Amino acid sequence: MNKVANKQVICSVLMDEAGRDRNIVVLCSDSRGSGSMTGFAEAFPEQFVEVGIAEQSLVSVSAGLARCGKKCFAVSPASFLSTRSMEQVKVDVAYSHTNVTLVGISGGISYGALGMTHHSTNDIATMASIPGLRVYLPSDRFQTECLIRALLRGGEPAYVRVGRNAVEDVYEEGNVPFEMDRATLVRGGDDVTLIAYGEMVRPAKDAAALLAEKGVSARVLDMYCVKPIDREAVLKAASETRGIVTVEEHTAFGGMGSMVSQIVAAEHPARVRSLTLPDSPVVTGTSKEVFDYYGLNAAGIAEAAEGVMPHG
Amino acid sequence: MVNLKEKAWQIREDVVTLIRKAGGGHIGGDLSETDILVALYYREMNCTPENVNDPLRDRFILSKGHSVEALYCILADKGYFPKQELFDTYSRYLSKFIGHPNNKVPGVEMNSGSLGHGLSLAVGMALAARMDGAPYRVYTVLGDGELAEGSVWEGVMAGANYGLDNLTALVDRNRLQISGGTEEVMKQDSQEERWAAFGWNTLSIPGNDVTAVCNAVELAKAAKGKPTVIIANTTKGCGVSFMENKAGWHHRLPTQEEYAQAMRELEEKRKSAL
Image 1 (cartoon, each protein chain N blue to C red):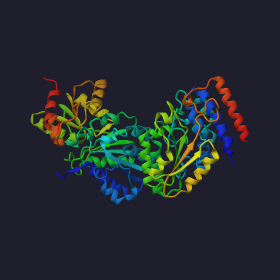
Image 2: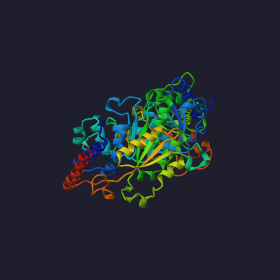
Image 3: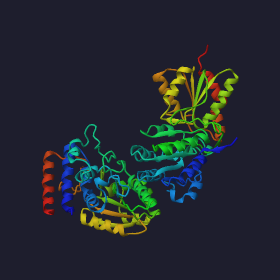
Image 4: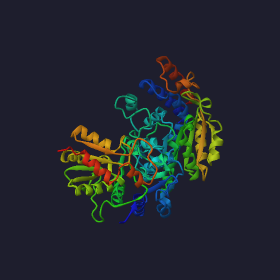
């Protein structure tokens, strides 16, 4: 198993592309180490900007550069990027429609024991609520690479959240289904649908394997495109399977589960169970320990899946 | 050659008329910043409707975005869009001419309105010019009340850190904000010393003297290795006797009688500038 952190993949892709495209610029707020961007900063000093510990400036400077033709990647811990500079994201990036990709690194509860100040468990809600801003949470190294290359081609304002830790592969080398803004079908199934993003896709995939052992056929959707969310895939799940479980590294408020429930309730009522982090600071521990504590693991997802299907 | 003094009074007449027609606007700050904008748009900046998409054009950001009426009147006067369209639709239903700079309007580089963004945006633009080896210059106008926003000082730090001598910030130092005097609300004294301490080249000028603004901008262009801030000491409501130095005129609509008197005063000043 080749375990790589998605932020390292982002750096590799940007280094690969930056050699061909002088307009690619990476900006960091004293975050080149934590964002795995040291390699980029050293290889492309002319295309790297350090703003210091100043997240508001990070976003505005990125937008100014983008307005002058640059393709900017502003890399900063997700917690600070999604809250401290939210107004700059709203006005300078989304409203002014500048070619800025906001890369929230060490997202969710990646920082484990560092506590709530460093956790981003409300960033989907805040970022997705900004008109015109796209929100992506890729699951593994293959999908991350596909996404970053697609964002470079598209030029739309976007927020990308990735975790801090190395993650297990979801896809196989040479067989990486990817279509921009369409949920990726990780596994087909007819009884229940599991919808996850980011680091929750792998346990959802493992849950489907556990369910298969019990004779339950679970569909797994990788909803890396939280906004624009793939409505069609959600509605197909609601109509073709007996229930939906959403799994996310976020609170229940304004996350992907909320969005899925909204679509289902309005267009094809079906049972939806949302697995999330709690409405409180999370317990101390590594990511795995925290996920296990809240049942955000294969066993917890499988149990929720069995519960969401109507009896009989 | 445009008579800059006359142009500044003419723009003020347009501003007062536009606000009267629209039913509201940030009249006090428009009238204080007019000479700065006139100096930039009619003398210093390489910005015309013909080069609106030219990568080498100079860039301008109105960081104190609420004083948009003066900017719109200047852009209309320069021919970026029909003046009639501005006067007929400003602030009206479905208009693109909203009450803060909107980049759907030709000539407006960035949306602004919430304070404290402009300087860091300008830093980004000036960095882009340097990366591309391009000769364009970047200007931004800030309000003095706006200097209370912490994000301004993030931009001040970055501008100095990168030694951006293609960047000039101008502070419309009119000493008033919505709630009253800047020194009562949040002290903004010693601005020259503050910016200088961060590493900026600083100038302090009478800001309602368009010639002084032009001279200061020339000095800024000559300064090498650091960005320049021009503290432009202005009068809020400049040109209209009963509006001058009155915090209440931050955002107030003149009555018909007040409008008539304001226009008489401005016309007189414009004619004396000929």
